[in-house]
Length: 53
Image: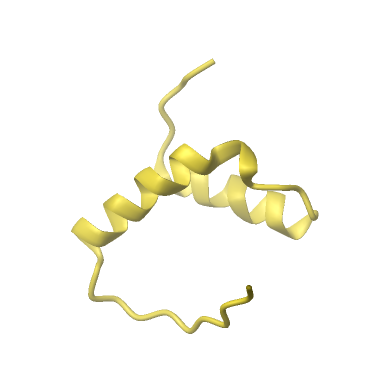
């Protein structure tokens, strides 16, 4: 089922999933869309990252 939600709602769902140890594999396409939005709208903002392989 597809439905349109705000980026805030999407971010809250992602945080909840990550904090409870759930996978985010379910939203790979959505994460790719979010990456596109980030690149276009807030691409110059900075974030501290620790990449894990």
